[in-house]
Length: 118
Image 1 (tube, rainbow, N blue to C red):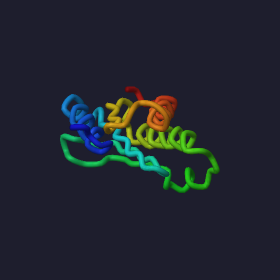
Image 2 (spheres, rainbow, N blue to C red):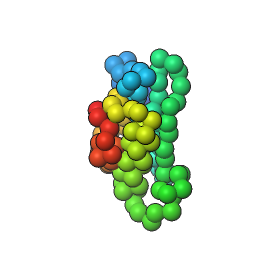
Image 3 (cartoon, one colour):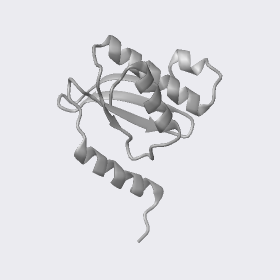
Image 4 (cartoon, rainbow, N blue to C red):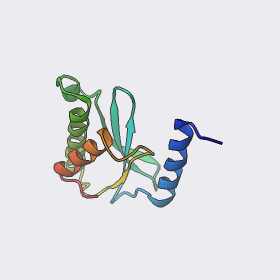
């Protein structure tokens, strides 16, 4: 039986989550992508808490008149800047079942440019 898009993404997501886990020293950088927005969170899975978050709904990203890929790169730089100021330099990247291209790839590149290591 063929899977629909959501079921396929859910299976991929579960496979990814079996392998990666965020800690306090290297939290999980989780990406959520909707049709118009993109969000990133740093999550400590041991403590079950979200440490930081950033998205295209932030003030300085929302006011910039740029396309979605450039906005994703800006969100990546923003989350990296927040993480560096909080004392976090390395993370584990969780693409959350999305393919690693387009906006997800732009966010990851932006985070790397911002100084995060993964």
